[in-house]
Length: 313
Picture (cartoon, rainbow, N blue to C red):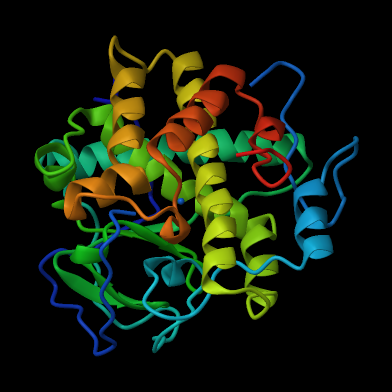
């Protein structure tokens, strides 16, 4: 990815080495959520004109879908459920990012986050809406979040309580060495996926799930969790399309992202860890599903194509 020398986001907090740890233990094991005519957002308010807008949330309401169930499911991070919750804006210390050129990985994250902001600012403007981007929190080992403790072992995640993405950058070493997904665009895909969850939050999809969360069994909840995660993968593909339009892509970048999606599918992870897969426990999607939805976003560049709720996933 051609990222060096580009503007970094100002919406990044650096907590690495600040010791901003609280006392709300919860662990998880899952490593993780354009065209000239404009792109339409699935916004439940119906403020944007045109057919189909708001249809995703309408489907959710009609079917009585819950986002996910309580318990040890790491997806609880997405709505702040299933555990003790720290207040939003917890008191962990933050500092500005190092000066450009002093920390290459932090520079990379800052640029990727900024390019995601540019995309979604544009999409929201096309819908006559303002986009407020998430905060991205860099931390080491553990830190407070609005959804409890952010722990490096849970992998990157989005917390809607404080509308922030949390990531311990050592995850990228694991992505390369443990999950077999090297390359800077594999890293960019992970960030774009988490920002996709923020888009779901501000367009009302995650809150709608959270309000309806008591209605289904764990197995049913897992099936709908898969649809949320695949939509975030599709949104990551939308961003990859945008990056291509900005001439940021290099040879092999998209292949790196697709390989990452392949390596972190539920079936691939379960087979790697325990030798077999249990489909009823899947909550992020199979490798094939994740690759397919990322590619759909990338190939179409059209947000309306990311309706995982109406599709046969």
